[in-house]
Picture 1 (cartoon, helix red, strand yellow):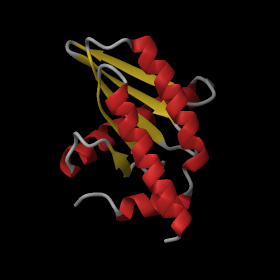
Picture 2 (picture 1 turned 180 degrees about the vertical axis):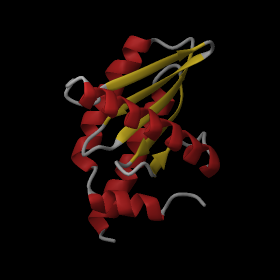
Picture 3 (picture 1 turned 45 degrees about the horizontal axis):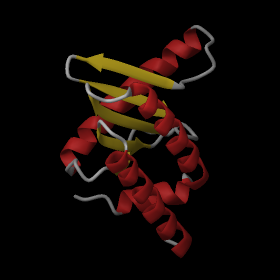
Length: 141
């Protein structure tokens, strides 16, 4: 891979990690490509946990896209699932890729929504096929 793809991967991973560390209430986050495979995960997840969350997030996004097509709603923007002790938030990034965020019930959802939107915009400039390939090669086994 090129030096640019490696630098972009480091920046992408830093942005994801920084988002989790700096956003109150956020526990974990992942990025998933349009084909449902893991691109990157926050440090709090091991590979098996990240793959499981990627499958959940990818499935939810697929259901939302189907509903969007059925009702002509013009695509996925955001999914929020509220559970008894936390939230799962799924957001479109770019090119069909998805951001999945796990947050505790104590979080400020408005702030998390704002930060997710800002992060998705930053990711959009970085997320290329070269970055996705580079990131997958460097995921923990």
